[in-house]
Each structure stands twice: as C-alpha cells, then as structure tokens.
Length: 373
Ligand code: AMP
Figure (cartoon, rainbow, N blue to C red):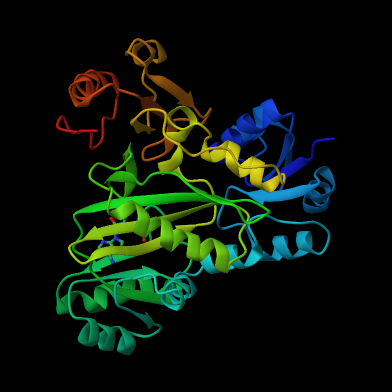
C-alpha cells in the first residue's frame, strides 16, 4: 500500500509535488488557510482556520512534508508527537531564523558574508562601524523575495533603516556582497542517506523576485563540486530527508552562502522537463522512503516565471519546445502565477525564443536578449 503524504501549505509547490506523486499512486493532502488554493485540484485541503483542522489533517496522511517554510513550529510540534515529518523540524526552525542559519553555515565552514546580530539602534551603529558600508539589514524572521530588507549605503540612512525594520524584532546586518551572479544548488537526501544533486541554476531577479533560471548555470564546472560539498554537509548534519535548496553568491573570492530553503524551490522548476527525475518527484520519493531517481540533465533548460498577469496559452505553446505551467492563481502584481520551460538546442535558438517570449509575456521582466546556455 502506498503512503498518503500530508503537506503543510497548498500553493504551487504543493500542487507540483502532488502532480509528481500521482504516477506513483501516492495521494497528497494539504493544510492551508485558503481551501481554494493551487493544490486543491490535486487532493483534499484541510483548513488552518477550522476548529479541528490540524488534527483532521494529521489523521488524513501517513507521513508529512511541507511546501511553506514558515510553517508554524507550534503545528509541527503537535504533528511530530504523532507522525513523522520530512524534512526534520530542526531544518525548518533554522531556516525560519536568519541568525541561526548563518550560525549553522559558520559551524559547517560554509562561507558567508560577515554579519552581526542587531537588536537596538546602538547595535546597528556598532555593526556599521565594524562591518563598514554598504550593509544589507534584514529581519531575522519572516522576510522573503527581498521583503524586510534595507540596503544601507551611507551613515545618514542608519536612523531611517532602524525606523523601518527595528519594529520587526531581531535583525541581521550583513556586509554587502559584490557578486557577479546568483546561483542555487538543489539536492535531495533519501531516508537511507543517499544524496543526489542537480546542477547549479543561475538565477536572475527583478524587483527582488526570481525572473528566470538557466540550468546548468553557464561556466559553473568549477563551482559545482564546491556547492555540492556545501549542501551535502548541510544535509548530513541535519540528518535531512527530502529536497533542500541553498542560494549562493558567486564572487571573486568564491561562493558565499546566502540562505537555505528546506523545500523544493522555484529555481528547480526546470527539472520537471529538464532532468531525468524532477525535484518534485525526488522529494516525494524521499518522503515516501522510496529509492531516489537520477538528477542528470536531459537538456540545458531555461525556466521563466509568469508574474502578475497571464499570457495567452496558445501564444506560449506555439513556441518551439515550450512547456507551460499555470498555477490556477488570480492575477496580482508581483505574484508568481505560472512558469514556462524552454529547452533550446543552442544559444541562438534561445535568443530567438526569448525575443518571441518578450512579445507574448504581459510582463517580460528581466529577460535579456543575450542569454546563453
Ligand atoms: P534574501 O531574501 O536573503 O534571499 O535576499 C534577496 C536578494 O537580496 C538576494 O537575492 C540578493 O540579490 C540580495 N542580497 C541579499 N543579501 C545580500 C548581501 N549580503 N549582499 C548583496 N546582496 C544581497
């Protein structure tokens, strides 16, 4: 009998996990505030607002996972007294707190930008003195897609930065990293400790939101083993089961870790078509205790997010080799509502496809014409 997997959250990540689970005859259930969420087409949604919602959700499945990294630990603690959660609670707790995350990177000798904890205006002034400017000031909890951040470039911005972020609680001040590129590494660890890693993705952002990823990241042969070593240290240290993502900056001094996400990741959506086994299928396999699939690349792939407004499906699907994924979300500025996968044969074909896409997408973001694979 195949297991049922209960997933905290019901967004597009849960939807794509459940899509990967279906051929394995694994059913998913979800725990989410909005029962009309993107995952609802794939399985029952238990409302976080219902009186017995959590207990009904716990009863609904054999083993549990998550697609939402801010899943409340209070709920997780009720669950783990009764059933197993993959990834482990500790990974979730650390990823929810930037200072703990940085401390773990330090402990495992994974390089990070110099940083200081900040809990008062005086500590912020001291951090500026010790780290120098510019610094990136971030809330330790709750930030995502660049929210809860202030780039502090001059001393006279200190008061304003404190006024904006101070009320949010504990902060972290990080030295500004001069990076040439942002990349991410995604890996999966099975219940038996087997680790498999996908190639690095090169990630491009627009207004703090991921615009597109190119995989394998061009010119990354030297970086891949280093990133693979870092993520393997994290997986083994945390006795992790499932998919983990590590976001990194490429600098002249090598790779610096930015943050980790204890879940499948937007920069891994390419793997649905671009890898032998996708991040979603391997996550499901790991959580269900099944053998992991190959993470090998089928073809170099570019994944482009659809943000805010839908293009016409017929326009996208008329592009040679394009795949379209729609999340059944309502249109809203800055919201990720779908993605497109391109698998061009070469850089020239990619350029042609991007020119065509730029005309089709209502919001073409940071797509540049000189992308190469
Ligand atoms: P985060 O929420 O930590 O992923 O940060 C969002 C974005 O802000 C990153 O993708 C980077 O582009 C930028 N960023 C974050 N931290 C730093 C840093 N220490 N130095 C330079 N840029 C940063």
